[in-house]
Structures are given as C-alpha cells and as structure tokens.
Length: 273
Ligand SMILES: Nc1ncnc2c1ncn2[C@@H]1O[C@H](COP(=O)(O)OP(=O)(O)O)[C@@H](O)[C@H]1O
Ligand SMILES: [Mg+2]
Picture (cartoon, rainbow, N blue to C red):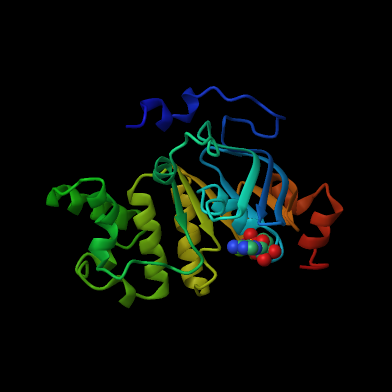
C-alpha cells in the first residue's frame, strides 16, 4: 500500500537546488547522467518540473530526449549494462533508491509512445486491463471507468457503441487517444509523452494538443516533440537538448523569444537540427 502522502506532492518536503521552479517540483533531476554501456547519453542534467505544467523537450534526433523521459518511468536503466548516476526525484522520491518500487512509480507515471500501442484486445478490454490486474471486477465500476476515460479524450460519443471492436481496427488518431485514455484511467499524476503526434495527421494532432491542454488542469505532462511550433503552442516550459546535455530549460516564451544560450538560438532559428 502506498502512503496517502505519496499522492500529495505538496505534503512532501523537498530540498531546493536553484530557484527556477516557482512551486514544488514534481520531477527533479540533479546532476543526472545516463550511460548505455559505455555511451554517455545524458550529461549532468539538472531540471525541475512543476506540477500541472506542460514541459516540452525539444532538440535534434539522438540527443537524449527519449532517454530522459524513459528514465522518468525507469524504462531506460533497467537493461543490463545501462547505468544512471545522480538523482532523479519524482513526487519527492529518489527513484534510483534500491528500495524504490518501480511498479509503484508506474502507477504514478503514465507513458504514451510515438506509435500508438493498444493491446490486441477490444477497446473495452484495453481500458479495463490495468484495473482488472488491480483486482477491480465489478462490471458497473469498470463500465464507469471506461465511460469516464473515453469522455476525457473526447472519444465516448464515437466509441460508446463500438466498445467491443478490436482496438487495432481503429484509426491511428483514435488508437493514440485510446492509449492516452488507458494511461489516464489509472489516474497517474504525471503523463510522459514521447512524440505522441508523430504518426498523426494535422487534424488528429490538433485533437491531441487540445486534449493535452485540457489534461494539464489535472496532470503534469512531459512531452518530447520534434515540432517547435507544437512546443510553443502547448507547453509552459521548454528544455532544449543537444548531444545529451540539457542546454537550456525555462519558460517556453522566453526560450523561443529570448534564449540565453547561443546553441538554443541557433536551433530555434533553424540554423541547424
Ligand atoms: N537502447 C540503446 N542502446 C544504446 N544506445 C542507445 C539506446 N537508445 C538510444 N541510444 C543512443 O542514445 C542517444 C540518445 O538517444 P535518444 O534518447 O533516443 O534520443 P532522442 O530521443 O533525442 O532522438 C543516441 O545516440 C542513441 O543512439
Ligand atoms: Mg526520441
């Protein structure tokens, strides 16, 4: 059982390193390094992410954006030969602490990937899967979860009469929104999204962006995006990553209008990348 306080980041005492974050950070990296074997993929990353903010990670391919978000869900470091150093604190807990339970983390931190990855089951079974594992079997409770999670992603009217269709038969847009609904139905506090719109057309992308803006009222969202326009449209804070370093991290408007690092300016002005 988790302690009640773990659901409430405001009740957790957190030391402060620097002052870029106004509220209590819900995610904090301190001198975070990550190695795939000998390859140094993240270098001395320091950042603080505030609750109920949308944070965008931008930068050229191969610069460590996916590695960083996957680390927030302990998906990068568990493979043989990979190694993290430094601190990554999520909801006030050091997630590299050997006593830390990864299953617990994954309950608090949901993840949505580049390619929609519904299970090869029906829409309904995708949405109740995690709940059944958690021991919830009451049909009316499960029905309510399905309705609420599809409503949250604006799919209820479209799918309420098709709940038993195979999820894989849906369009890419519906599949991706279903995956977001599946992640959200488990009520995580943080949602990680790794280029969630890269396989979607502009109309579907707009739907997902609108959804992100609605979800941020309740959740903290970290999104990797290739699109600087998307970062500018939806995020409160932006981090620019280059060759494993977090070059600059701050208020999105400031990063795009008045970056402090020349390397950020070169990237956002299209000089390279
Ligand atoms: N599983 C892996 N094993 C070894 N190297 C990897 C692995 N995943 C990513 N890398 C390397 O780490 C670097 C960062 O990759 P990634 O985090 O995927 O970058 P981005 O998401 O910014 O494109 C790249 O050089 C990539 O080749
Ligand atoms: Mg990536």
